Image (cartoon, rainbow, N blue to C red):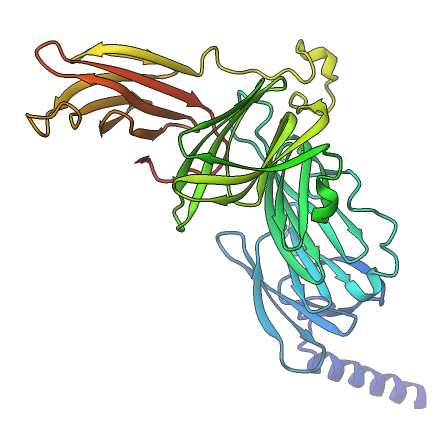
Length: 438
């Protein structure tokens, strides 16, 4: 009888506890995991659940239709949690806590990666960021005072092998920055220079690889045997032996100016759109933009003792010797510049576009120097109309391609003619406004 009464009382206690918990089984309501105070941790977490790491509580919210996660983070028990959001793969810094959310394949919730920076500094001093670091997409490396992550490799022209950009997250001195650095180029990030050598986008998402380094300005160009300041007027060229640098300036959507740069040397030819504090290397020369104005660029030109250029695009699992190409070979269009003389309504085709001398405007009948020509440029189903005087340069945007149009000479009369010069290139970078003249 005493035994039966004891079992009955125990059963009542269990039922009461279940009622107090709502009768739910483990992990069907908001749960909290307290993680060990290690330098880093990774845990799968469901929406509504929370994790405590080094005294900081992270609560995962929902994921919206754009794939962005919401979460709250703050000191455990403080009641002062901040609501934040992050897309999959984006890094977020909250004082000493670094975190990243990634998708869980085939499941709800997210995979949460956590790093406690004070403790991580004790074990991350073995990597020298100024040496070449090889990263795959999604990989990251910690070093003393920060870390670098290769988030994505962004291809540009599928027909070229030297225009990929590595999208990188860099943390130095507790500050997160995102930069995109062109293959065999560099970009400033705070007080540091992020440089890239070979960058490969691969065949599938996640295949991308990049060779990057993070240096101080005093180290970034230390291998150069010569460094000097140069100024190039917009629309002009610097020619020294086999080195030719041609520039035009482009107005940015956000204001300010960028430079459309073509560099040719013994290492081949490269075309890119660069901002201030970005550089591009071809062969034994590297051009770093310091100031970009409407009428000119001011730059540093570095000369190295060796010729270097990007390797061919890399496909994982396929030996480069099997691709029937020479490693390091740069493929360029057959011609990048042409000059033609055309009459009224006459046309010529050049590098994917048709140029037509449509008509001429005689602004002052007593002057032969202020006449203007209308040049029509047809490309990719688009027609651009340019009205220009001799000596003016116009830039027409195609599909990741540019045509720089200039009328050299213009004669009127019944048999009017125009001498039209066109230069083209596939330029790397974001697209500015469609066309501009200067």
